[in-house]
Length: 97
Image (cartoon, rainbow, N blue to C red):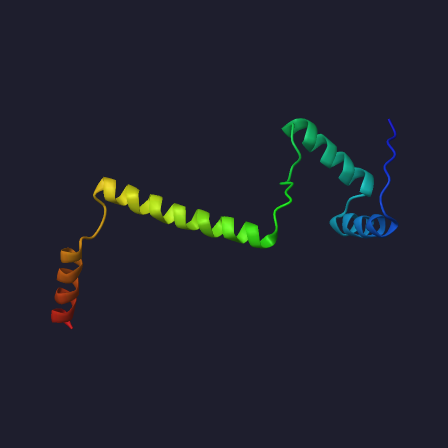
């Protein structure tokens, strides 16, 4: 069943060029998109109004959180190096040099 969409002429030409470079017709690309939406029951990419700075800050916060959680898991499992053990390693490495 035919479907008509309206997009800016410049966008249409750029989209067509990218599709051709990939080896697809624009119609095939839109069909792939539509099938993915139906199969996944969602848009296959993130839609956000978040700025690049906000994304970077969120990524930084996530990295800090991940590091804290990793350290917590190591502590809980006993998989960590105490200050005393670290000093002992340093002194034993210095003695062998």
